[in-house]
Amino acid sequence: MTPGGLRQRLEIWAGRVAPTVLTVLLVLLAAVPLPVPFWQPIGPGFALISVYYWAVHHPSALPPPIVFLIGVLADFFGLAPLGVGTLILLLSYSGTVSQRRHLAGQPFLVVWWGFMMVSAAAFFIAWAATSLLAGYLVEARPAFFSYLVTLGAYPPVALLLARAQRSFASV
Amino acid sequence: MKQRLGPMLRVGSPLKSWFQRGTFLLLVAASLTLMMLGKSEAPWVEKARTMVADVTAPVLALLTEPVTATERLFANLEELVDLRADNARLKAERERLLEWQRTAIRLEAENRALSQLLNLAPDPHVSYVTARVVGDQVGAFVREMLVAAGTRDGIRKGQAAMTGDGLAGRVADVGQRSARVLLLTDINSRIPVLVERTRDRAILAGDNSNRPQLLYLKPQNEVVVGDRIVTSSDGGVFPAGLPVGIVDRVEEGVVSIAPFVDWDRLEYLRVVDYALTGILGDMPSDGVAEGSEARTR
Image (spheres, each protein chain N blue to C red):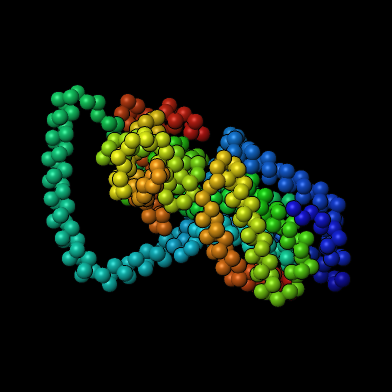
């Protein structure tokens, strides 16, 4: 324990809220209409990417109640019908945390593979729940396409998050 | 569901497994409740939605600013490059449009004369509110857009949102300075339309693909690929005759439509305001009785 307690505490605090702030920023960013190819199908996946990333690398930074709130916000911003996105973020989070020992500290490809599994389940559940709410089977192709694009978007977004994590962990 | 978190967590994890399991189940239950509430369209859900939209719309508008500026810059450069070709093309187009204008004036005069003969009640005058798209909420399961204009700009729930090409959707809810537009491809979108050539009425229903379908078309219809679809005034939802799309495919009774709107280039939406004029004249926008649910102020 060093005497510079306040500064240290501030830094710890910043490190704690950073994952939440970053995820919320990603959700907002996804809502900005950008003329970038595949932007529309990627957008909603940002929340899922971020939640998965923190569930693997630093689960205590994004506790379930926060995941829930992020889910509600993401649903307001078009992740899925209200509650559905919230549910899949929660399930993805808990599923990932439960398998964390196979993922944390592993090479990137393994973590990406994990995301492939988790997001496949997430998109499937979202599709099923949306269909259930709609009362008929909604078109699955856009969901599948979104899934593929989100999978492709994982490496760059994870890289950014890793940078951010390092920057606040190193202080 | 994998909830056996405890034994799998590493030692030293700050999460207490029993506590977390309880919280987690509670949160799952909460999201299931949200699903039900969202489905039943509880009024406070809509209110919360509107509030979030109102708060974030200015932020999103700010974030959109540099994007728009960059886009404009590139568009300018492109225009400079194509100046000569454009000029030639525009001259040719102008000739053609002048011809059309003459035709339109002639037809308008003829139409007026015939309408007078028939004593036809005129359509109410249509005016537009143009709003910038600041939120793109188009995903695999939801197709909505957030625009930076609300009740204070005269936008009300249920109005039609268009681009220059055609109908894009309808205003699902409005806040003071933002409005949520449900695109016609969303699964919750149902729009009364008619086939321009045959005058067959139908409902255009979104199914989350880019090709919404016509429902409730009468069984012996003569709809063919390429027919234009326009809005009908049935149900008093939209003014009649707004262009929607063309028939893209007719197969085993399933008629799918290719909307005119270019979904990738939605920067501005024009919200059609047709209830303001006519009978009610110059009344302030929030005092209008039609679409009364939307009076939030």
